[in-house]
Length: 364
Image 1 (cartoon, one colour):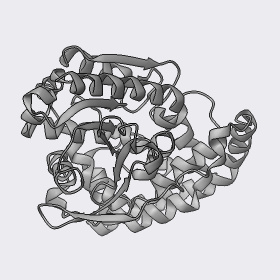
Image 2 (tube, rainbow, N blue to C red; image 1 turned 45 degrees about the horizontal axis):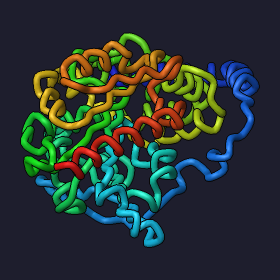
Image 3 (cartoon, rainbow, N blue to C red; image 1 turned 180 degrees about the vertical axis):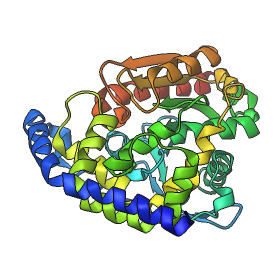
């Protein structure tokens, strides 16, 4: 069968997702009832609405990255702005900088914070196929640091693919991860729901594919789908109820407000399947465990939910074992989007990391 024929067959099969969407609406209603959790004070700011004036950083291969910087409020400047440290947040696969909503809200005006959309994600420019790699993402991170944090100590915070991005930077530039006494630039790291290798990449596709295609994905199937990516995108939109159920199941482990599920699903659906397919091969070949040891020279915290179905807790435990002196935090019953689901616990750990890193910097 020709490629066009295969795409047609696959597309025909995926149309079943739209057909079962009506039946799935009942399940969604049940989910909504189960998730009728009382509104929390921190939920009153609509998710993804925190913004700063954008800055464009151009990568080594010419891709424009959308970057936003939250500066320290002058009212807090006299307190030292956490000793002049900058937090740099690196998001995951098929997400964008808005996923850091609760972390951004917690540090806004108090600590200088940088957020950016990875290449081909969110508001950033599209990558060439050849540069849709984890190594290139590590180089992009360095470009962001050079452009918006040219001096002063940095703490890197990476979620999922963002953690892999930090591992790629550590592989190429281990000298950056060092105490200030040794002229180090990166004085602390948080690795959240991530890994440095050994990942089954097909698991990452489950929340972003139509239900009919969510199981048994192989590289060849993904490549074929990429050629007909517009069909996949349309089918996913048609089967929105089914997609939301899958997002719920694979992004979260415990009960969360329905707004969290809708928010994550909207981030996933904004990422074209062509982009999903371009980055897919990078996960299968990922192996950077030997490189993360460089992070052992600075305070490093590894965080993961025990119910993470995408980058299971075993990955975080392995990272912890490879990073000397690191702190492992296991969030009970939380899923992959622990930065939303357990944002209070995650932020408390970031507070501790910030205190430890700045204390070490001050004593240098």
